[in-house]
Length: 88
Image (cartoon, rainbow, N blue to C red; front, side, top):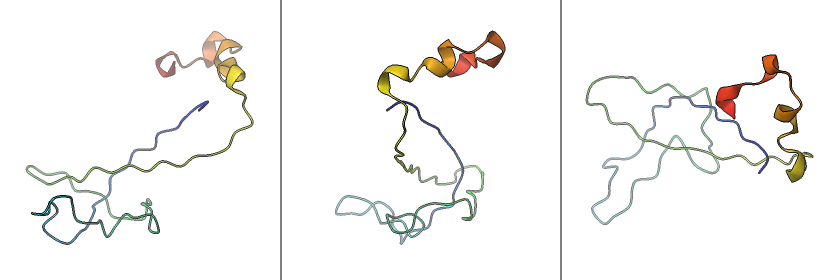
């Protein structure tokens, strides 16, 4: 792992009720699966008091030519104006 990028966004998930099953586990999401990944085209989760929120995340791995020993070079050889100190 030589870097990462986080892209948060809101999605109004749908599922067959009840979400928490009496036998344990949770209901599968209709809006998120291995064959149906979450995209920005889905409607956002409305923000309101006492609204249920289903938290999910996806991970997408990408190959990089950056070598492990070189992963910090972009920061170490940058000028002060280019460094995002809160990112380090």
